[in-house]
Amino acid sequence: MNARSRRWLYTAVLVLFFALSAVRLARTIQRDGVEDATLWIALLVVALVVVVTLAVVVRRAGAVAGHVARQRPGAVVVPAFTTSETLDEARAAGASTRGIAPMGGSPAALAVVGDRVEVWVRREPGPRWAVRRAPGGTTQVGAVYGTRETPALRVADGGATVTVVPAYHPLRAAGGLARDDVAHAVREVSLAP
Image 1 (spheres, rainbow, N blue to C red):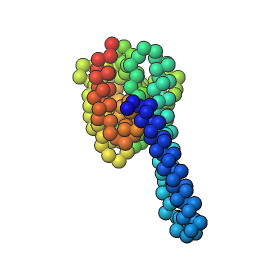
Image 2: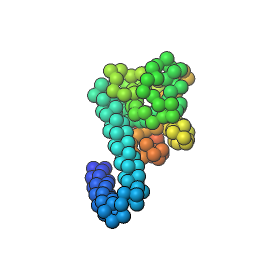
Image 3: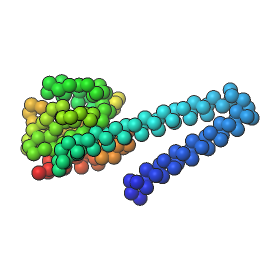
Image 4: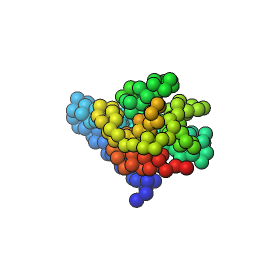
């Protein structure tokens, strides 16, 4: 099953869940009144908020990576989410911190351009800062993402640094389950021409 099929299946299951929940809610209201339907209403609202939030995050992550790919044709582009460390790294590099959440999770992308890795946040006309590629400078580390520590990609050159959670699979990355994506990103950044 490929990504498109999984996305279609996920959407179909969500639509079915919401349809069945709406029918169940309507029956409960007719039979027992609004007071007994409070739990169903709360569950539907929470589920709707989670689904909409995840859809927006996934769309934004893809949009930033797509923007960077258009700005840097032929470059290796690593879609990512910022970590808590990214904010401090932007400050240390003298870059703007606008749009970088303090606890991580902001959509970003890295572009490998020659001997440097550019850090892009949002769909801006240029990168926020760049880190030179150095031998042994691209590693997998633990980073703060939300309220937990998760595997992340760190690129450092002795001066500038960037630490992100790669998001080749944005839903997994948003949940902090990007271990395979981190290994993939380390290889891509290290071996890019």
